Length: 92
Image (cartoon, rainbow, N blue to C red; front, top):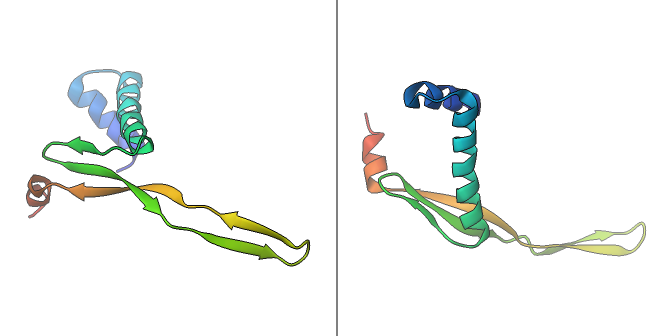
């Protein structure tokens, strides 16, 4: 399933048009990203927790052509831990 499929399904199940479904879905994802950006977890009861994650990338790239070095900094990422209920719900 992709984003368009999700928007179509939300639209039909909730009874809103696709623009409203897209705006709602985008807002939800923006909330998650905002919390992660602010180094906070985003918990969805019965589903799981999105957690900020530091991706270590401390190294330097040497450029022998012009003798310039470029330091590559750490990046932020995101992890997800499924709740026990979610884990049980996806079992056959």
